[in-house]
Amino acid sequence: MKYGMLAGDFMLSANILISGNNYSKIALLFKFMNMGMVGRNTYFTIQDVYCIDTIKKFWMEKRAELIVGLQNKDVVILADGRCDTPGHSIVAPTQQWRMTPKRS
Image (cartoon, rainbow, N blue to C red; front, side, top):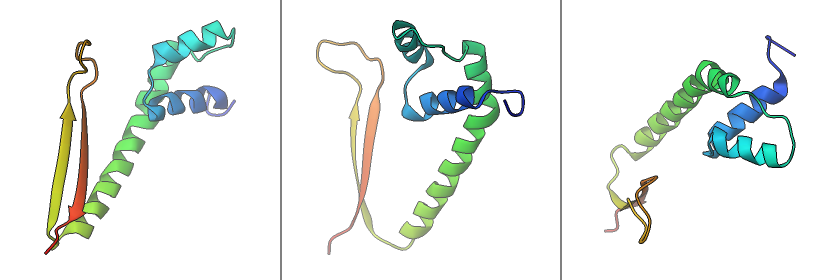
């Protein structure tokens, strides 16, 4: 235990967030496998205290690098948005973006 927290709780909480999964699905999986799981409150505390700001900082740094790399260049931006799958209601809308160099 370091800083009042088990390393496994921190790693599991961070990886659930980074993987794009959600706490409830992983907790159910661990229950089916009869494994211990980090508590819901602990998960959200770790997420708020350690993960969110770090991920935001990383994203802003990478975004700034990308913007600097694209300055003074002609690019074409392609996008595809999806809000629904036939037969299903909207749950998680997605957008995909791709930038390519402009051809002469």
